[in-house]
Length: 324
Image 1 (cartoon, rainbow, N blue to C red):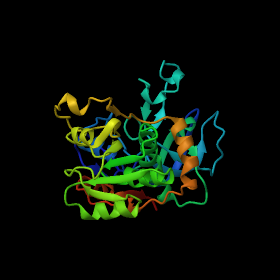
Image 2 (image 1 turned 120 degrees about the vertical axis):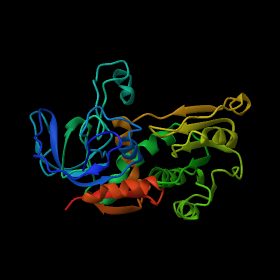
Image 3 (image 1 turned 90 degrees about the horizontal axis):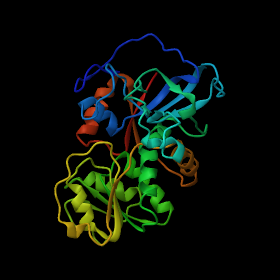
């Protein structure tokens, strides 16, 4: 399923099976989670470096073949995340901040991703996955989980945590937060009773409209909803010294707000991409929680339908494309 141009609908095409080069894997895709970033690429809010492009960066698959200088064995089940490669030599890469590398390669945006039967990936940025979990259940961990994990780490030891936008990432983060002894407050679109009920099922102690004030001061807030107007809302909700973390790769413009709601050492920060260390830490943590993902399997050829449902806010948890 490829995108021919920014804003164009997904189209089903048949291509010759790719071949892995040196250091690369050819992976037979079993499942690929559908992420809001895929929606941003499809809608042209985040432009790919070339077109046509195959989106998808929450890939679970099996190594079909490998190029020279690859240690992973054929038949190994692996995960392929958003970060698909870095230069390894710049000041970001050498300071454990490879997520900020200027030459970074991103799966489904600067190289073809997992909305396909096969995907080629740099073996150094793939991760062996446990064999005791289902492909569909694992797929959302590879972005919703990884980015959520990095966002949560940016909140420090915040006890009272607000989550704005309760979808794929928030339903994973809330489980980790509760495992760590934090209190979770979920904020959804006004009137979205289904999402609020879902948040309570995932461990939130309170769930309500994002337009309403928090029931008590928060120590930190994470924004997964790509709505810039929520930044001042979250700032008003956090206590002195609190942090507001913006977890999306794209967000509508943030409106002006009075300095007084930032004062008293409140912080607004973004989270960009992820590192391989994030993946190693989170994939080791996930089975200890244990994280239970709520997923909706959808056949690959109906990927456009999955994006439409995500756009309309109709998903609880994560849609996952599956191949036959």
